Length: 281
Image (cartoon, rainbow, N blue to C red; front, side, top):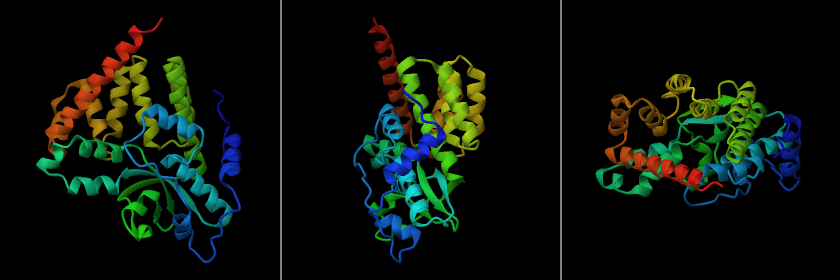
């Protein structure tokens, strides 16, 4: 699987999305983006491998691809507009769900899975005035341009977009070869493109664990804890250290049912890996 260089990545994105079929007229850059058609797939979240495949194809069927397309369109039609790649740290839709939580809701596995889905890494476009473009907002309000995620980290767009592409490329390389050392090298390249991106550090923590560098993995996971509202970060540390403070946080901040589902998911994944290895010839 060939890795695109930074220049090849930009060229392919502009070829895919730099069309002449959109005319902003008198619209503002933000309103223009919301007027464009966006392919939003409803239903449960894709598996990580599928997301990586979508991302490396530069398809706009993921938040990465939609952000990439939006940046290209803004570059074409509003070349003077300063925009950023936004890495969501606290998701508005996640907060809406949490505000609806009740003992009855916590009994619903689909409700818990939806919270986990909205806590996963998510990309948006951020404008210089702080406004945000997220196509999901169109499904929440008739005035999506008025909505914002409470906390978003902003990065130079092309460096962050290429870094995100590299993370997905590295994931697929590891899926195909099992070479965690190569995956780490790719993540380090991504980090050079966007040093502050939390998603890179999260993946790096997991890869360090695969390489047997447990202490480094735990320290890195601790260093990014709390940067994003993300129950999986706390569960990851509980699973590695068995320290009750992480389990207690999950139960207090969410519910016992959240902890039970994460535990079941982990056991299922371990069984899948063992079965996979047992079936190799």
